[in-house]
Image (cartoon, rainbow, N blue to C red; front, side, top):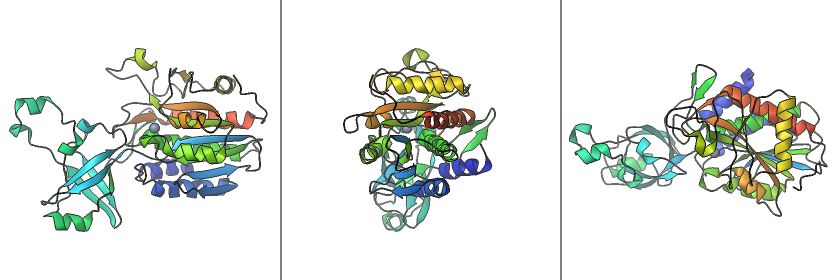
Length: 353
Ligand SMILES: [Zn+2]
């Protein structure tokens, strides 16, 4: 990872991008890729496209989703407390006592998610975590409703206040590594491919609204009409307590990017990715997925009359929490693998299984 790439990743991770509110993140991606792309544009849905060799007849789409989980302000009560709903698959019991930032038109507003003192809880309250989001309240320090309304508007979104932190063994913990690390990987692969002359058109998409139903990749894929589409997302690392590899297959942090077999993935593309990894001496891990994956690869495969989809996953611990952890080594190896895969495509590949 060179210093430019590093700065890009950390800037992106420090930028709030809840689903539907990704544009601050897209601006970071746009600025980073503009010097390397033949064309950069944002579409009406908010996806950011960077294109190499746009005239190429054979089109390859790369997708990393820029959106992260968040909270949305739904209601402000008379005392000035905010009530929120979750944007994407937030696990509610994790939220109490967290510090958050509400992103408003006038700038960031800090808040905390309140919690009843443990001393005052009845036994059953102490034992059962609060799992309904409507039972949580956000305290932004406002004296009353009027003061809160001056700071925050309904429909503003919030994220947990958690800066990225580097750990030993090239590990990184941050909120929303799902899937800003995937955006990093497709951007890096794009940058590496741009240094040589790819034979195919490469459409890199920093997609929006994945966490609420793969919505950005769906419209982006329709517009691009790719022959091959590769999504990069986080995958389940299983190398921590209480995680059963029998459910999803084994994967470790630092063990290499994960490749997947299964109905969501084109066998010829999967085979090519495996072969490329082997030839480039990049260690990969395998996790089969027996159904539609919950990633942009699903939207891409089902585009129009179908596309040859693949998924590369970055092993991630504690997914959908603010403590997500990955290995930077896996991310960089995934980018290298993807760039090599792209540069080896000639454009006439047989993809029909
Ligand atoms: Zn994701």
